[in-house]
Image (cartoon, rainbow, N blue to C red; front, side, top):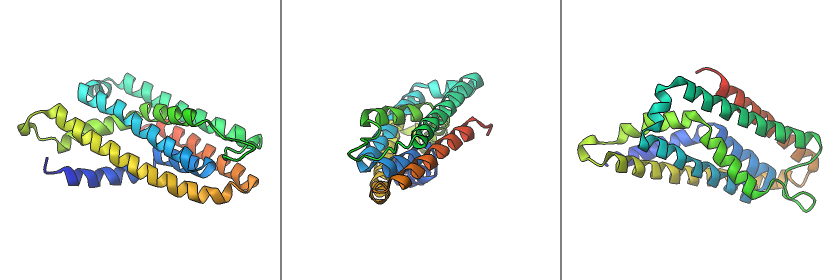
Length: 207
């Protein structure tokens, strides 16, 4: 697979592009700390396994060929992001900051993980990306096409986790300053809630 380094460079560029995954990791790290951000990073990276299996087993092509299935996933993902935004705004309006302090431990880490996994799984654009992107770096003449796709997907998942983790550590360090100020923490959560709702609306809109 001589194109592996080119694939890695392209994958890193795409991972850094703003989207629900890195924005969620960023806002969670700011609001609740490095550990919460890292858990979110692990959740989104785990969700990529689902899209890998869909692509390798051929289900992703079926979703692409059957528009109602794609739109069902699209609207489910949009609704879920909007729901996360609503929950975040509601807690901010109630004056309940999600910061990890003694008075408020924030969202449980287990919930953050599964929220991240589900948000990634319900994003059909990730599925379409996998079936459009991975085959460009597969060499049919070399044989073992499914194995090549699995290797490429593993590289993508590992680099995604590394980048998401870096975002989590950075945002956690920045958020430590704001979490010492209750009013700032509330504003941050309002901003995060609006960002999630905006991403949900964007996902629901036609291409």
